[in-house]
Length: 445
Image (cartoon, rainbow, N blue to C red):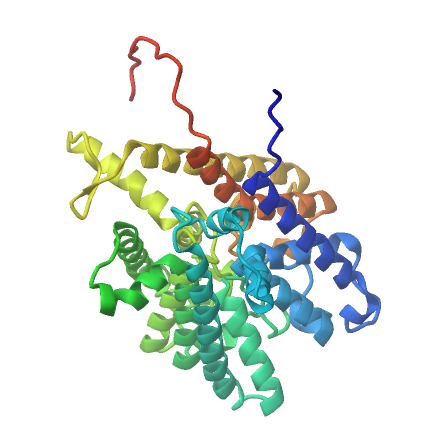
């Protein structure tokens, strides 16, 4: 009796789902209603913007605040929310509203979409995600609206407040400030800086971590995953802030004109935003080369698993660092918080990191051809930002050639769905070898 082929493949369905959303968004942005001039965007620019929004990146070829009408901006905001939380989360929301039962296949898709370790409790987690998202975005929107109301009419302040709250919680980095300024007018403003930093951080630590913190009062325990995420994130933020403060302290174009509290706030913001939001309070092209290289490093690491951010993820970086440290000390096991990391996790971390490096290197090489004459650091910055779905740019994005724009579109898409599908494929398709070859040795180092 022939076996029927099973066409249910979660990674393929997720890739297809993101692709459909992107093309629908691109079509809507080509409509005359979407732009201020009533002409709509060209399809390539619309596809770039839709991909950037759905993949919660934030790279833009046209200024969001001055190019798009309210309709166009709301399309972008919807794509950001869909891309940040994942279309399966919204599909589950509609199922809840309709009283529909979540099937086993849908639970498997949710597990993949959320990068969860198992299907157990995944539907309950989705309910929590929707609640967390609503509460955090509303709180952030209210705080930003109050602050913006000082500088603009109340209606506009509310619109701007909630747009930027949703954009930054989903680690997208789109802004409405005009002229590609992002949040640079608020570099020394503690309300805007700290609110947006909190939104980026909460969106970037992952919903699994957020849920465990929420339940801590009852459970009095945190999983190894949550501990590694929190410690790694804290170390990266503190180290990044200190280094940026040191590198930029005397730079007349960035920190030097600011007050000392302003310097600290701006350094903190620029340490958090590469993980992986894309908003900025300092002008990126004016940063020193050490700072730019540090930001490239932070962008590549990115946010944490199961979050709205991209990159290879904090846990991947921590696993690799722990492996190197264990080897240096002559230890056989990688241990975090008195727990041994299984070899499969180390292999997965290596695979995700090497795959990410390969994509960044390949795209950088291709962009040096398509964007010839541009500074190499600017191109490397752009490629890393696109892969890690960050959205920071040294100014190259609006001037990209048509081929360069297509390359960045593909890179953003790969950066959003690639690491997830690679990790899922490794976990779900692991098969025991039928036989094992004799051991062999090669020289390393």
